[in-house]
Image (cartoon, rainbow, N blue to C red; front, side):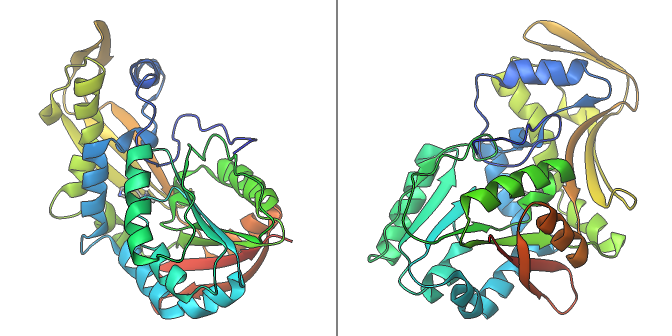
Length: 321
Ligand code: AVI
């Protein structure tokens, strides 16, 4: 992204963050008041593996419902995308959700998956090339939360941003990201998955699964600090804590120190009081109208919306006039 949303404390998800700045960022975040670690650091190889397991959990409904919506409505979505479109996917991940759209699309000009992890992205592109031999695939290795440099194209450009990753942006960051996307996609549009406000019990279960995978995913930040930043965290000395904040309409995730302790990162000491927490993630939930208003304020014209019968998850088609 050329004009970037500056992702400060609680940034967005996506693939491994650049390794070089991890130790410095970690130290700065743990010296801050209150303590924090940006959620983009979840996604090293182990964190990505754990996230895939989260997506398959019975309690974690977003992945399952979004995929069902894409499968059920792919032809309507493809019709809105139009023929010969260049489809740009932001943070392509495993690129599974694009498949129903690619099958339904009318002779797409190209598929342009963007992800920060080069080897991962090229492996995905290879797999898709086998399954869609007629499709032009042009992967771009980039952290799209920082920079969106996509080569100019004469084709109508449409974006695809599934998974409600937009929920991991703070609302102002989300508006900035959407405004940049609206400029990039002018003349086309954006298909975006957005998790909805709902019964807090459903949300609580999704972020506190019985198998403890989300807890392991959260604690992997500490394990990663031990692996990459010469830290000495004892994982059993921290608890996973996630709850729904109804006024902010978001899940907040923390790692809570079970007792007073001192840890070392690259030889520098960080003290924790008993019960002191590290803020690791916000996952914002939207109403359909609330998200449409946000998209409008960023320069999109909201058009179609698809929701499941229980209104747990939504996919929006936003036109970029
Ligand atoms: C990637 N992102 C949309 C997930 C979410 O639900 O906010 C990350 C996640 N955190 C805990 N579980 C899943």
